[in-house]
Length: 233
Image (tube, rainbow, N blue to C red; front, side):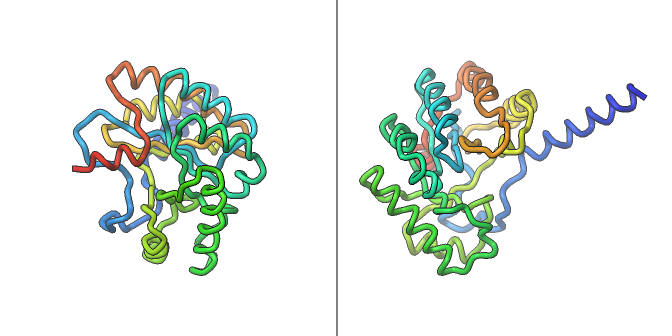
């Protein structure tokens, strides 16, 4: 019985690991303003963090990034900027890139075109108040992407940023599963999806403590998303 249970757990762990590498829901990879990665031969990647800022986790992640001399891209929710302005300020003052992740993180498939644009505008105003500059990168909630969203983003002068590797840290994925998955699949030009705000016990920081030095040892350099896309071949 124990052997059967152990085998089942191994199978479930394997299936979970496979889900780390699925692209977000988007059939528009050929659209000019949608990016999953940068097509480059260089060993460069971008770390991205969604849903923050968080009053505790954001600070801890920033400290780790600073320790390794890394700049990342944070896709912030407008409401969290309002709720945790000091955390948002810390991200900006540390020199990281800030992108638009809507104001309330709605289930975007149920939001009208007008509602999506308003969500983006409201978050944009808060980011401008924080940084003094208009953000140029937009990540739709849950990575849901459609022609409608792409058109709205283009009209508002945004690039839509998705990802290559989804760590599923928001789902409480174990540290070792996140780490092994990233190390097995990461390639130059990849965009990695993490979260600095999760509603359950996450293992983002523990995984990053292992992933960052391991990737640096393999010769990878970490860039912001804008820096990464500037290398497009």
